[in-house]
Image (cartoon, rainbow, N blue to C red; front, top):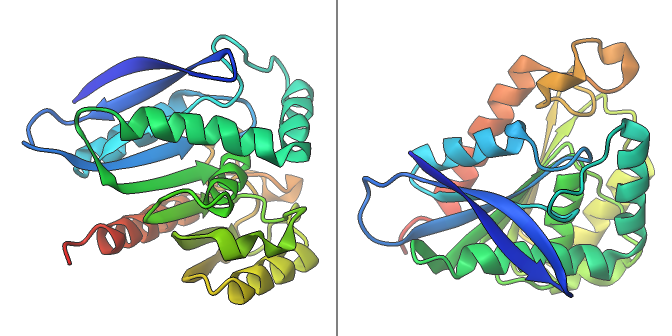
Length: 240
C-alpha cells in the first residue's frame, strides 16, 4: 500500500489531500474521492482511502477547507461548514477541484470515477453530483440532504446511494421527503438505505457510543454501510 500527500488549487487557494493506492495491480483503475466530515481531513478519511485502495481503487481523501486550515473546536467546525452550506457554488467548486486532482492522476481511469462522503462530506458528495459532474456514482454516509435548489437533481448524471441512520435527529422528515422528490423529479437512479438504531455520525468512532446525544458510532451500521458501498461500487464499475 502506498500513500502520498497531494496539493492542488482552487481560486488561488491551496488544498492538500491524501491519496492511497495498491502498487500490485497493473494498469489504470477507478478513482474514488472521499470528502471529510465537519472537523476536516483526518485519519478517518485517510484510513477509508487505504481501504478503498485495498479493494482495487485509487482512494483520494479530499480537503475542502484549505491546506493547514483545520477547526480547533466543533463550534468552529460548524461555522466553517455553515459558510460552505450557504455558498453551494463554492462548495461544489472545491470538491470538483479535488475530483480533478484525482482524475488527472496517472493511475486513475478518468472514465470511471465516484465520490463518497461522511456527514458534511456526504452533503458535499451529493452537491458534486448536483453540479453535473461526470461521475459513475456518489455515496453519502449520514450526510445532509437539503438543497437550496430543489430542481438540481435534474443535473445529476451519477447513480446515488444514501446510507442513513433511521434515528438520526439532525435530518428532518421534510428534508428526506424533499430529497427523495428531487431524485424522482430528476429521473435519478437512486437508493436510500436506513439503519435501525443508528443516529448521526454512525461511522465515526470519535463520536462516542451514546445515541441519546444524537451523534454516536454504531459498529453494525458502520460495517453494513461499508458493505453496501462496496456492492454499489462493484456494480457501477463493472465492465459492460
